[in-house]
Amino acid sequence: MAPSRSQAGSSYLESSSSVSILDCRSHTWREAPSLREGLCSVSSSVLDRKIYVAGSCLDGDSYTYKNSFEVFDTETQFWDPDTITCSKTEGDFYGCGTACIDGEFHVVPVGQKREAVAYNSKEGRWDMFGQQMDHYKFSASCEIENVLYSCTHGVFRWYDTNAMMWRDLKGLVGLPMFGSGANVKLTDYGGKIAVLWEEELPSRGPDSGYKKMIRCAEIALERRKSCEVWGIVEWFGDVLTEPVGYVVLEKVLAVTL
Image (cartoon, rainbow, N blue to C red; front, side, top):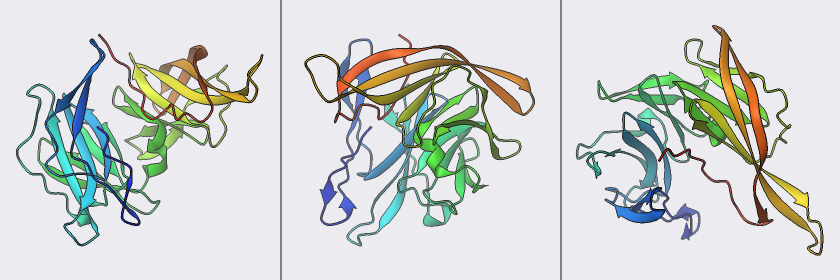
């Protein structure tokens, strides 16, 4: 689900309501029902076989943004017909990060002082969640068994919902160090963390210059104390080589066929 990122006018992004679905069994794309509104910023997460989508769109001709929130039912293959309100008082969804924790859909706005909100689908309401989730940690994150894991600035952390704070993921012996600007992505791989990252290496042989190497690690998780989670690196290696200049890692998903 990817709205266009091109410029419209001066500083406003062009919006899109189109949605596509990738069938991993046949490796083919097909069109899905469109969003009710065209979005210029979007983030989504899955909860109970439904895809929750939070984003922003232009509010008429005012050149200001308004929040948008829609739910796609993967069983019926339709968007829920009921409109769910999400006013500006419930957080700004432009450029937000999202995650599903404790049965709720969390939206974390951009900015250190912007409070996160959580949508309770069973009770149909939004709740303020606090400022501690930190939007920047959502750029490389995944949820495994109701725990959110993140890797930012080369540091792995997990979010303790009871204490409402991030804690360091311990262990990780044998995992290479990542630079603060490294492009790192995480995903749930059967209850383990699959980590993919990019490295630029000098080319050998007749080709001069640099090449981009995509590397992967598989990390098992072990809770040893109530507030300690350890990561055990079971494997890492190279998986793909691309010329420098290609943007490769945008989103990582593990698919079971």
